[in-house]
Image (tube, rainbow over all chains, first blue to last red; front, side, top):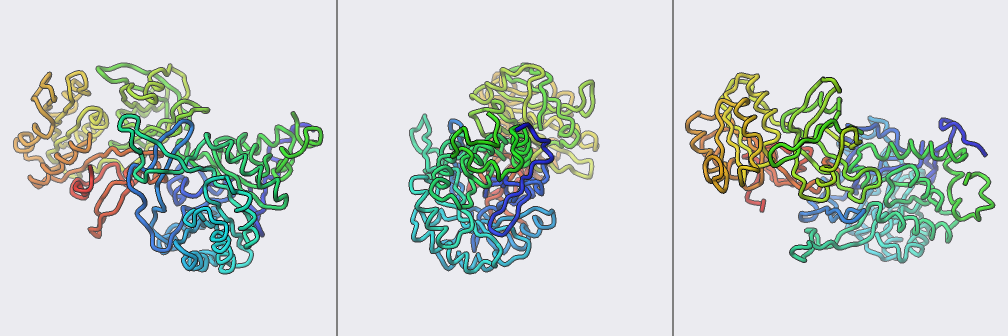
Amino acid sequence: MTAAPAGQVDLTTTIGDVRLANPVMTASGCAGNGRELGRFCDLAEVGAFVSPSVTRDGSGGRPLPRVVETPSGLLNAVGLAGAGIDAFLAIDLPWLLRNDIRPIVSIAGANLGEYAELARRVGNTPGIAGVEVNLSPLAADPVQASRAVSVVRRDTAAGVPVLAKLWPGAAIVVEMAAAVRESGADAVVLPGSLPGLALDSGTLRPVLGGVTGDLTGPALKTVGLYAVWQVRRAMPGACIVGSGGIRSGADALEYLAAGANAVQVGSACFADPSAAVRVADELRRELAGRGFRSAASAVGVAHQPPAARGDAQP
Amino acid sequence: MRSEVLTLKPVGGYLHLTLIADSIADRARPGSFVTLGIGGETSAMLRPRAFWLHRVRHSGLYGGTVEVVFTPRSPATRWLAQLSPHDPVVVTGPLGRPFALPTEPVSCAVVGHGYGVAPLFMLAERLRERDCRVHMVLGASTERELFGGLEARRAAQSVTVATADGSVGIKGGVADALPAVLRRNQTEVVYACGPLGVLRAVAALAGSVGAWCQVAMEAQMACGLGVCLSCVVPVRGPDNVTRPTRCCIDGPVFAGDRVDWSLLP
């Protein structure tokens, strides 16, 4: 197999019934409401833009400091800071749609009733490419998580995919993924984060106002790949969105090889506001350079024995 | 965007880094800032660092350039300190809401402490272009840390210097020097940049003489773009309700009387 012209690589990716132009998304909370990064790149070029987690009433978030740099990582305890669903539907979503950006709306409820209400209001809005259910408020409880996913699925328009974003912490990722798929999730989003703690080396006290935080960044790439690998191996038919430490097209390709159908670019957007668009572009060239004709044909190749990789070049 | 190092020069206790960045130079305003990616493509330091734009040149031999100032104290600034001409640096900007300029030729006090003096020369130039009178008050802990003392004499009608150790100028802080400057010049507008304590004191002094005050705030940022929500400061909106407000995109310049100083450390 020889290298194909990059323009001929088919990057389209399907999540439920929705077709995306490419498998690269922004990660919720790392790309603002779109306008912030839209000054630096054309977000219509990413497969989908995932909104910050929208809550019913809005919230101010956690105390400062909220983000601290750690070796190859960023530890954050921002909380679900945002203005709430009314402002999102009135201001942010129309802006995204006006600019031809494919929005996946992340929602976070304090209880099942709130998840249902958010799903009813968001999941029936024309133009959205999906609803991402942020399950972190429910902690690592497969029963609660499946209940939340099933009410969101029930109250979201048919044809609009529901993506279940699991709780950070990969230990029971396969069990969680199975549970939410059974409850109607069209895709599982495996968060590229783990709980972490950073101490101030001088005072020996926690740095973050929220004490503990979620670790993201390249330090998490191996963890994210492991989660994708595990879920793919257990569920060959699952639609998987992987994340964690993706800052180049080569990183994204590794996630596809581990079994992800799509990927999310998160904290890499901080130092490079056009990171997601750049990753999509680099992924196309990575695929072409290795003789893949499509993004889909690279999904899961890491699970095949080396001899069977007909599509890939060493 | 990817930029290239043009020069890196020591000036007093500071290093001046000049980058070739055409599109940023063209859009920069006084009070704008940039972030620099630290450590290159495979860096373990993920948080971009924010720097005030000290100076921009719109066109020269190398196209537009931007100049930032720092002291090599942390691992990130030590990485910047070892850069050589032609080295690539990812620079994003100009970021933030700049200083608002008066439409009338008014009497202005421009106050800065330490590294916070860096963005004030561009401001002083714009004010002078508008026929404003500019009186600068510059402070630092020591003479060595005093930024731009000589440059200030060209940029302003008067310059008052204060150092904590009294090594040059008045012994004390800029807030100690400011009341006399305000009185002498019937100051109508006060601009300030520096640490929180200095801004708080300057905003109070400006308020006490009825001067309009703008402060350029420094908060710890993880993106500088308005997405990470880590640099929020308490600011009263038009409805008089105080909200956590993003310093990077809704600021860093705020009206001194809109910041709720009582909620800040």
